Image (cartoon, rainbow, N blue to C red; front, side, top):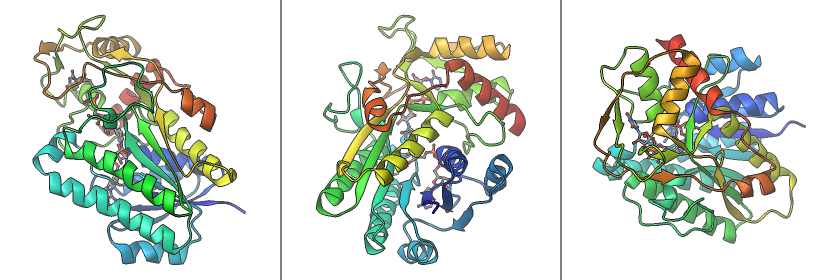
Length: 337
Ligand code: NAD
Ligand code: WQD
């Protein structure tokens, strides 16, 4: 019988791509999302790509009764918990908003899972949990540094909550620590939909290339890196989505899995801001007239990690390249412009 996966935040950027990959692997998909950062047309796009319309509930994951209703209506085998607010800067200004949404939604979904004996959870964590690391590549065993943003704290606390709940119950969980997710589905039908002016590099860059933004500043060219700009591990969202499919299969098929595990999800390669820009220009034949500006407050010089654990445990490896990332991101931007 087909296994059913509940995707919280399933209309969002990473959730929608994961819904597509799960459906294509033969899973039943149920989505819950309150559309605080997504739009309902994404559901039809998932159907257009896969030929299957997932069951969708428009509800807040902090609403325990609404979540219980979903578990009453469906036999859920595993949960992938994406639902969260993710704007790092806003979380510094409005920490309570982030703690309330990101922590309450996790506590609620875990309580309902326990009540309904649903025993597998994949959690969206982030490489942000490591803070400004001083050794590379970053490994999962590195200790967290104190987080500078409420957003980062919710991921650190989230992992701690999961570890303790998993250690004392039958719920098994995996926290996937994503590096920098970018790109879009190659169909051009789903992708990132940032509200307002984007902060992240790729959506900023594509909106600038589409003449929706006037200036594009590279934040700092005086870092101690090969070209003076920051290094990041950019990962294609379709590869990232597949890591979630592998995690579900791993949790559902292995009896002897560790109660809690945290796994880096990236390509294992570091690219500078300038490398990303020049790849975008070369692949898409678009000139980007950027200027150099000051460093952005809070930016780490380098963030990239080891992805051996994902390969060993999940039998997963990123396959798509920087070329695919800039091509698919631009294709998506042109479709929504
Ligand atoms: P997104 O904003 O596109 O998707 C999140 C979805 O969750 C949205 O559709 C939103 O409407 C929904 N949501 C938020 N709070 C909710 C609630 N209380 N109830 C129901 N739905 C709710 O973000 P994304 O980029 O797809 O990120 C997904 C997850 O991955 C988040 O947990 C995020 O913190 C994490 N993450 C993202 C990145 C990144 O750069 N995109 C990096 C690391 C980790
Ligand atoms: C990448 C590089 C910028 C915009 C953030 C979160 C992190 C995670 C992923 C959720 C940096 C430079 C950017 C611009 C630029 N999210 N840049 N000009 O900061 O690595 O990570 O998203 O968990 O928590 O902090 O990503 O895309 O914002 O920046 O030069 O207009 O691009 O300085 O070096 P970041 P980013």
